[in-house]
Image (cartoon, rainbow, N blue to C red; front, side, top):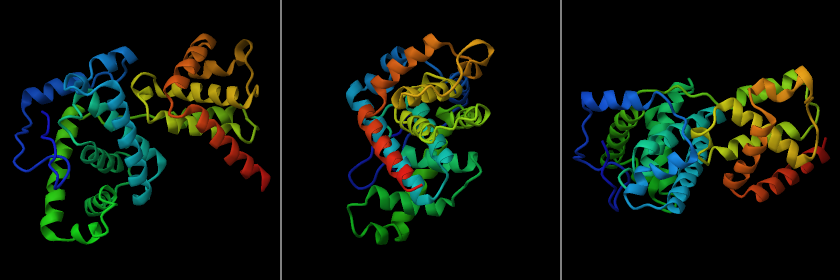
Amino acid sequence: MAMLPSDSSHHGIVENSPYRITKSGNKEAGKLSASWYFSRKEIEENSPSKRDGIDLKKETYLRKSYCTYLQDLGMRLKVPQVTIATSIVFCHRFYLRQSHAKNDRRTIATVCMFLAGKVEETPRPLKDVILVSYELIHKKDPAAGQKIKQREVYDRQKELILLGERVVLATLGFDLNVHHPYKPLVETIKKFKITHNALPQVAWNFVNDGLRTSLCLQFKPHHIAAGALFLAGKFLKVKFLPDDGEKAWYQEFDVTPRQLEGWFLYAKSVIRNFLLLCLVCFFCISSFLAVQ
């Protein structure tokens, strides 16, 4: 089911790939899509990339790399953050089942963005996705914008994306159902009438930064939302919600205080540059409040 690694002339699936979608492959993929939540140990020890000689440090780098690429690609395509988040989740799920050694991350990420646009009803034309992604991937080449307009180069990229779409769909078991922490986060902020100006934005930032990790493969969206609020409260040192009796805010997310503390310790260990992120949040929010 794996794609061939790219050569130096272009990324991703190469021409004459031996990949074929079989009935047995689809059935197996369907079984795999039944649950997308695993323990950290399961994710790290059962990694297809690990079996191909890619260690945890390298795989973590590759994960962050395609997340950064998707964020940039989404912004250039002018799609909402939810669409970007969906594309990232698709990519994370794909690499649970496939190896980085056999699947170029930028090709797979581009396909995931194309699919996410359709799933989130914010589609971008295939042509736009091809042109923008090629220029982004080859941003160090001043002539990239002109090269991709050449028929041969464009057709090759189109073939890669369309073949990649089949590979991603089969690997995901055609399961494109994704939920994000954004909705439960916003609903809780509104329900409890949180008035602290900075807290919602800090929580939102934690959700976005968590996308660059494997958190979405380990915790359900409402748990991540609860954790983000908890992290924001810890960082800002504010008691922002009632936590006694029937009014306990965390009950909205079906979590316990002990689970929140555990999530807090774990998230700090995996969220990219946690302390740096906190400082950036602080200075950005301070600047925002200063002009209000």
